[in-house]
Image (cartoon, rainbow, N blue to C red; front, side, top):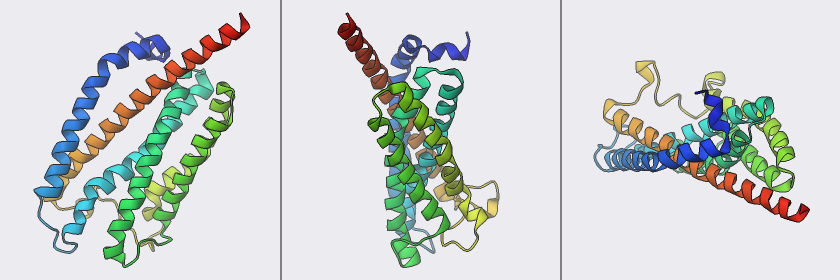
Length: 242
């Protein structure tokens, strides 16, 4: 069976109907284990004290904010190339989830930055590119809402997604490009010297998996809602033409 067969709305709805409960359960389990372990069972860090525990929300939300846009980019490219409606609806469904993840990352970053840097906000390269990414999310959502024809909206938002991908890339690698920024390097890295302490590493990874599964569950839920709304819109058009 070809992967593209799941772009058929009926097949997509059937598959996600079976998978959705399992994804929700796995997300809830990982989030419960990761956050409880991270916030209540890890010791304060030597340099940062208990403040460091905000990483169990900040790092996963920041990661998902970027990956959500990456998922939207892939879905938008599929729409532009192959014109599969489910991919366009999946990109549309992911945007509100991504904007919430970006907002959580910005807020928790400010809470973390105040005791670490002595300020709630700085025009650091990564922070600035992340703020611009947040604005692109808002523009993407607004563009979908402003255009009545769904195919035209999908075309224009896909182009906007391509442009916004530059800032998604910058927000991930800004520290590597500009060393003068306040923001530290990657929390998890293949370079052992840049990794956090082992006592924080495992609960953080579990939290990241939980946030990833939560994103998938929410996108499935919202995409299914968009598919139903599109079907309802098509039925309404048929009734008007009849």
